[in-house]
Image 1: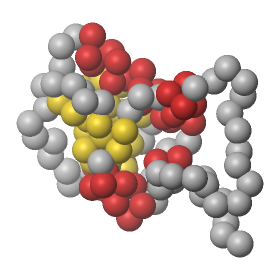
Image 2: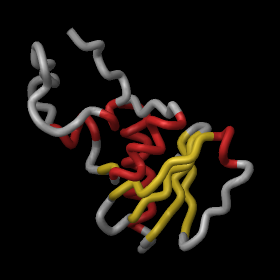
Image 3: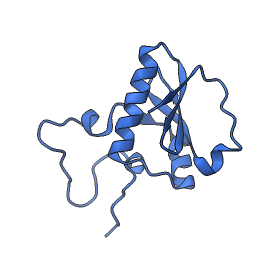
Length: 117
């Protein structure tokens, strides 16, 4: 039996092994996780850096991306607590994620906006 995965961004697509956990009635997948997706590179960064993306973080990230999209942003850094998510706003895809420990040495390039969510 495998341990439950607590980082929602690291759950692979497809049917879940073991018992299926259902969302509350009337809640869609987008309601639970938001409409933001994670690239393979971003998933690798999350896992390697031990960054947890729970439902509340995913919701705040989704809200930040929506705010950037409303202003016409193409590529944005969305700051959620101590994590910076670089997002391709048009397709709502997280390109990479940087935690506070690595942020000091990181330079964000090719972005046109920053959102604090």
